[in-house]
Length: 332
Ligand SMILES: [Zn+2]
Image 1 (cartoon, rainbow, N blue to C red):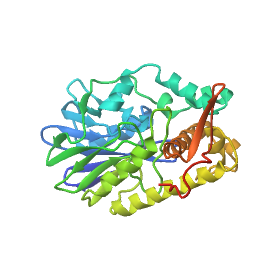
Image 2: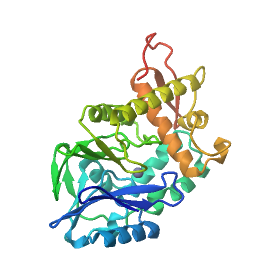
Image 3: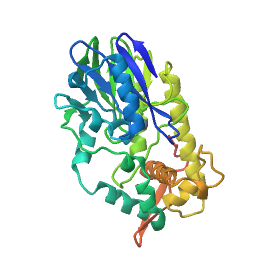
Image 4: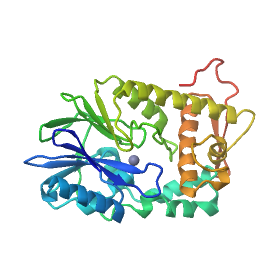
């Protein structure tokens, strides 16, 4: 489906088979000089077919097209490898460009997941069926790195990069200040909450995410163009809901830990998830993986606030409430 949102500014819906997200919103700005495509889809036939048909209907010539990718997740990034041409510029953020260049990333995630209680026998399968692995990029085009505040133009649109880490390490939105449009990637979604995962001891992605929400909350925006689902007109209201959601989640994690010492995997198995499954055992493995990453993100936030304590013993990480935390310490 193609929809003209503003003059020469289109949304093309790219199907994501078997994903609760259903579609990726790819945004295409058509111009007599260089076109710009923001986010692409998975590297699989269903996505490529939908993209080709959209490009054809819009009369887009890929040799006159540049790309901006909001973040490294495969549903946004991977199809780029089938679309970028020798003349295309590919704009992307620095933290995730460095991630692409670093090797051994999946292996490090695997051992981190094991340390956090993810059962060894399910690990390889969870990674094998991870959409980022199964439908990832075949090759990475040369990247033009953009930073917070940098500008890129396409047709009548002049965008400013807004760095919004949280959903991913280098997640970046595009803001058109004159038209008050924010191309939001997965920073703000409606109906579903962006997944916040953590897979290292060093990062605190939930803290970053909440700060990024505050940053966008202050901006003058009439229309948010998210990476999935429908467009959002009241960004402040949605941001308030997302902040409330994480506050509730943090309280839930604290109550799960009451009088107990648990791994992140065990905490994840007891959190409430909006999935059509009777029990944690029935969760598809990729969903157990995302849930565990999300549990770690919330545990990390609470640990840095001093509300819980992390214990590393015999290669396993567990968490308990911090009994000496100051009474009345607030979550959120
Ligand atoms: Zn996405």
